[in-house]
Length: 612
Picture (cartoon, rainbow, N blue to C red):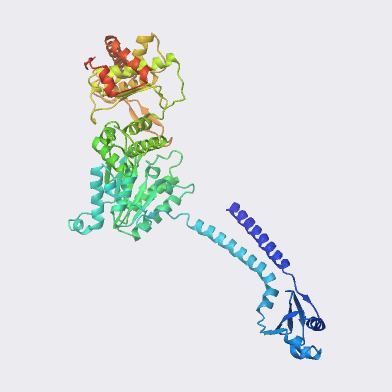
């Protein structure tokens, strides 16, 4: 605040100097008329130099024919005519002079006398008034420090509201929220059956699935006040401010009830409370305690629904999730094939596409992508088309944008020597060949040795349909595909590069999950091993608690190594048996750098999928 005060004083001082300078210059630029005696005036009239005489009280303003002005004074009781007659001025010369008598209002005199002193005084008064306003504003902000910044979406409505029709997919979530909105609009039909209004609805979903967008749609559909605020806006460095803001928020909401309060990213204040390590009575916990009291404390008759969003439900405090607080939990899954197509149609509005665009094919190529990812895909496609000075967006633009969103931009500046390029070509050919042969692997849609992101090349495999359950055979085949690149390099060059390092990491993670999480190991039996816990005091640090002995740990390591060894042997068997197809794929990659699905299947039309 001191910095702003000094800045305001400096600005005011500079303005003051400029105004006074201009005023002084203006005063100096006005030349005062020369004063002459009455006899001088008579002499001018005699010489026929006077055109007009203006009389204001005792003051005479003599205007000469050359435009010059002169000033003179007369006695109060004398008139100009009698005065000139006393001086024996020729009547004919007096008749040639216009005499104009003006009333003396006194305004001009007093303005000229007082204004030079009054203006600086007014500037000083204005300065002190401005400073007092600043101090009062600072005091007002200090007093409102504990006030919430929640805004009423109904009063502060955007130019374009969002409705349920603008949110594709998430059908079950929209049904749940439609029920809440119906309760607010028509409470009588629910109350007549003894139903009570739910206290809270928690939107749960991974980042980008549309939690905030769905909340905006609720604001658009509801005809009740809708207050929205972020969880991080409650937390301040001063203890008690967050709790004060929660009280103020619910005070506003209760006045506007029935209404909806939306808290985005509630995990910022709703994390599970600690056990006293480092002091449990901190600002965040006070804020959470106040939220718990407001939602289901002594005052239970308020018609305020709290809508909250989070992608970390596992770290929320159990007291926040119990019935009476967040009664409803709405899960937003990653969109399936049909949902992805519907989302693409929503985001494709107002974008010019040519006849080649097939959004169904785009949806098939984007498994696992969320609504935000799909919006980014179409936006990147539009940017790519604009860079090429196109008038419409083509299918090729969108397909390239998928790879950019999933893997990163092309690294055209990365220059590889012939040996590295050949190594990457055989590496990707190994992945593609093994994936084509194994029956439980996803179909290969594209192979490329053009660097994207951190990858020197990539093999794009896309499932033919959405999968929610995976079998052991799926995992085994996936590990075998991951080993295909390493096996191909060793088979062709009798040497192993650093290229397969990420493949080995992924394969090891899959093998560990098969053994320790999914209970798919015959040797270790149907049970899980290890419990993952989050240490609240240490933030995001994940701790795995071992619930098995050292002997079992050794067996787990042996089983993981066995699964990886079997996958390596299976990939080696496939590549040795189909060596000529491996060479065909690699040579085509070296020639064209990219192979699409149709061309790939033509190359391997004689090689039928089979078990390894």
